[in-house]
Length: 181
Image (tube, rainbow, N blue to C red):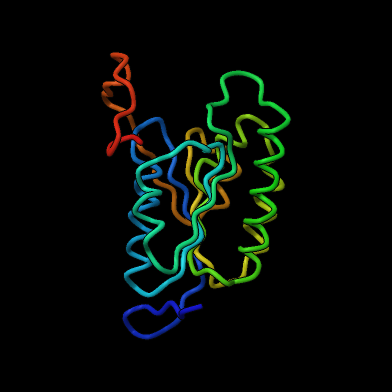
């Protein structure tokens, strides 16, 4: 674990970020922060909830040192009621993320689409907040996904909302490789 120092050399405690909203860019922002952290010599664990499909960032990240990416979802989207497998994978991911947060083995832990897992009741907000609260004090944590609940927002140190002004998805343009996938 590398130390996180500010410009004056004082070590700061890890903060809790949320990237939420109906606009594009939540996962992209978390990936950008991950790259910045890697450039600073930090280690990163990037947990993707709900996601089990191939995304282009996985090709790049697999070649980088000091970052581990793990998906805790199936190869399809949850359209209505989640399956037992959806629940099982998300709970497995939350347990692993909780262990990693508590261990302090990684400087930055990203819980990508964790708010969507909350929306589908794959785990509870109490369970998620418990894992985040029990983290090692120096660990920075990022949660992404639409519709972050108020309780999660209240617990965070930084909240950024991505607002959709206009999106070509509304005209039924499918996700494009290199941009959305």
